[in-house]
View (cartoon, rainbow, N blue to C red):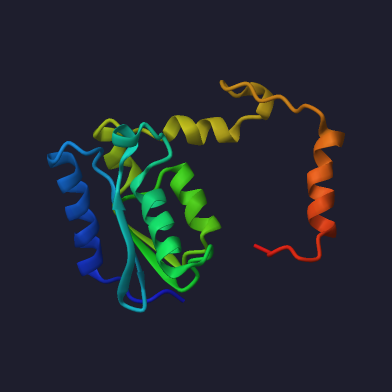
Length: 159
């Protein structure tokens, strides 16, 4: 069960997002990750500053929190983000095993501001063969080798 949301951390995410725009550093998105009442990672969007389409505020904050804690699982942490996570950031939140995500703006507000993720959600619902981005499976049997090796490895770190 996640902790009771703390508006102080949400305000910090909102302030980071707003300052990111005012400074010209990037888009109006930022996130703060908290564990036991302590900020362990915070970051703003840096897509245009770094020419990295994955450098969303949430992704950057997850990377910083994991580095600060020396872990790849953020179990026991909560994320406060200035806007409802896009599909990539939501998936990353699940992969990071965050306990909860609290957001300020929702996806409808993001769309009104010019950041519309609805196209992605529509694409995910389509059969692979109907999506606008072609994705074709090649060499399935050969590709299984990496999974076979993983399954047989005795020294792997499960995640």
